[in-house]
Length: 473
Image (spheres, rainbow, N blue to C red):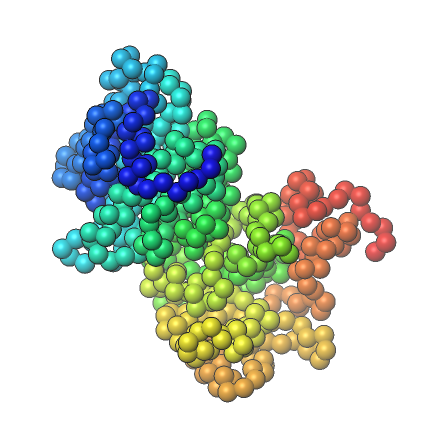
């Protein structure tokens, strides 16, 4: 279905005038902003079976059952379960054969009289795509970026209408479904950092690609995957944790990638300030490392990288951030504890190269200020220099220009931490060469890749793998 960019008024009215669409609205935390649109445009009697908003915690718990937090996915699912079961129980006999039943629910926290730092919420719609059919769910997590309460409420109402409309009219076009969530919402008002779509209607959907589309469409800067391959809401996993993060292409993940994390972990765990703090490790891929030669994201290649990292029990973070100070700023939303960035010498040299900061108003000095104003340490793995036949470490790296004084300061204050490898780094090694070996059928690639990853690449024929191994090497 083509998207004609309808207004919020048009969307709500179209649903109201469709006699087959009939359901319940349950909204907690931000007013009844979504159902208000359906009342405002007229014809709501044909759509709204019930509208409920239970703000008193005791009353809310009596209806939906207690949860540890009121703004969480568990709470949203309980709301959807309860209201959908009631709707079917009460109306199935009377109008089930001619009606697409649905329930919209949200649980959010917005600005109140007392300032709130983290304004966010969970929104979901459970719906039938045809009468008497099994239900489907679409669930999203939203973070409000604007600070004014009334603006947040207005945005919430529009987003809820967009979600319901997308569920009914764009449910077979993942890109359109996600892009439409921002209809009539100005950039910079919200970000959506998780989406789930379940039920028979979405059996052919890959939720990893669906979440990747959030970044492609500009709704989020980050998506996060657990080792099981499922998406996770970042604050749920990262809240108040000490974070160790390694950036790379991971095309494919190599033994060197894993050793870098292993050696960095040993140093990280020695930091006395995080001894009693929960910790998490992340493998990060920036979207610029997902781009194909044509400038678009290679989705098949993306899935292959995620599969391998998850098979190695890694949390995977996909970000739209090019610079380290951007990802550190993002992670600092969720924690005030130490953040360790794991990188090799080549990436460290880029980090201290002024030419990469021409778009930053204050240049490299501002970028460094943004990066190191938080609890940040760089854990730097050495590399072998073929020209000098020497091992280059964070200690002996020669940074050129005046910025070397800042580098030396960071080294002396232990904000740049040299790592010592468990075994000598390969004298001739390039991750890009590993991918080329796989495509060519050269068995040499197996020397550089973890055993479990080798098995998966061969089994699923990832990265252009061919069983016909070349004998020319």
